[in-house]
Length: 368
Image 1: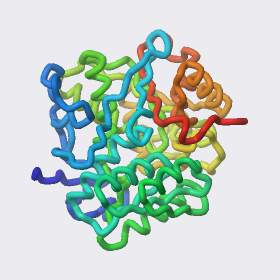
Image 2: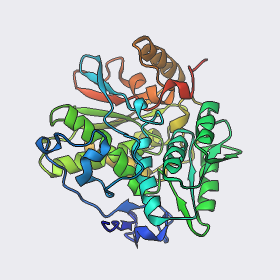
Image 3: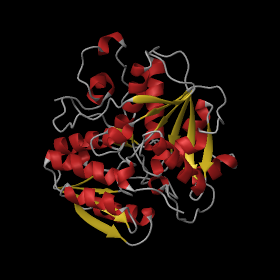
């Protein structure tokens, strides 16, 4: 079996062996990155490979999967001139989180912990619980009070133990991190564990392949904890470094105006979060993160790409959801945020792709 790449702290450089079950930097308690710089396969060499994200084997830190549910290879459909949508709500648990969850489950299988814990506003929890069920690993998922009933039902159906934490998304994260410090526990964190980012980056590898070896001028991505955006930045760097694309697309990050700590920092020209963002109700529950641990990395990735931040109102989210439904696409309220941001033409004539990240059945329609 191929040795696991080590992790390191992007803030202070502390190195952490991945087989140690450590989930954060022991010095600053921040998230980890992976010491892994792969070279993607050429477009021609992908022909005939398995029809899942595992076709990009050269770019994944784990190989020979045992718990795959066929995740990846979601369709790309046009929405209007120059703008297409990637239908990641068609992944096995109905959200893009499957891309990273399968990597975490594979990693946990190799480390053989006594139990797996995770925290989530819903979709990451459903994905982690499903892949842990596939791997026959005991799993506990911490969720905030007020999480969508359908997401709770899905997590429970996969056999995970549910811990509903009073308070907001941050309260659920704190509870999970306390549990993660217990002996022989694997923290399947989609925020702190870098393997998750190396799963989400396959979103962009698929775009590159499906667009015939190119990428659009703009990638529009919803951002709460930033796992899809940071995965996209990894993939762009890999493809550009290998000479497989000649220009990097701009990354445009979308937040709900009700909970927009990163957009606020961006407006202030800051490199990190500025002040405190009180939690506020929003239809975009999946990106309602008041203090994302990878804030500095997210802001830097957007800045270096030549991108920017958008915020969307609750009315814009509602209208975008019904608009997509009228086009045959029933998407959860968080998953429509990117379309809400760009459907009126703010990108001009530039080509763009938006992800539709979760199925509408997870939340139902957003009502005023």
